[in-house]
Length: 119
Image (cartoon, rainbow, N blue to C red):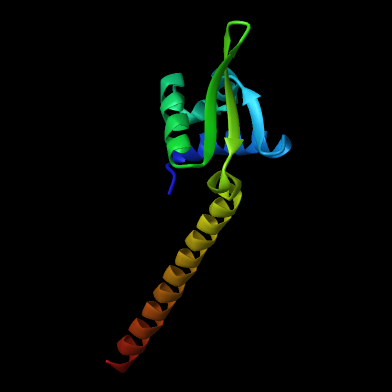
């Protein structure tokens, strides 16, 4: 399961890759510029997150250089392609847990009312 910051960075990578047939060329700065300010992710943190996501086999990341400017070549792997489905599945799981908690609370309230009226 990805952390909140990892999800933010992976969402940016996923959005860029799905528009360009699962692979694209970018710079670290382009990715960093798309991170919302409220996420409070520094450039160094983003670099670490990118390496971790690559290690976790979400994508292949190759460093290159063009006219002296460092570039990243990113190609989504199967885990990266399934990222959107993973997020949807997590939302479903949370919704199911909330529903079960609500049902249990209602049953507990009804049972306590029944016992209260019997005594």
